Image 1 (tube, rainbow, N blue to C red):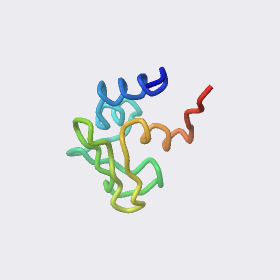
Image 2: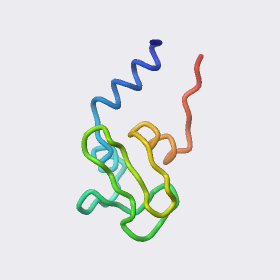
Image 3: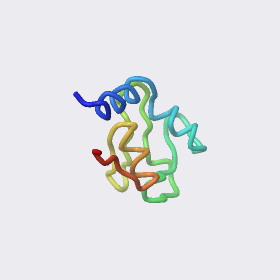
Length: 80
């Protein structure tokens, strides 16, 4: 396992999608928010506690906390 993989796993083990959403300033109601990926208006995006990540029932975007941040900020990791 390389350093990037270890760092990504550490992030996944340390923070939940709810905590990430709060840090990003999303309005969260009962574990749901407006999807920041597709810009929806309803609270269709579920932010899970624990290591389950997120899922939007409209745009079908889902994944772990790392992919949530990557999709929101339109960024990716590149191996060096």
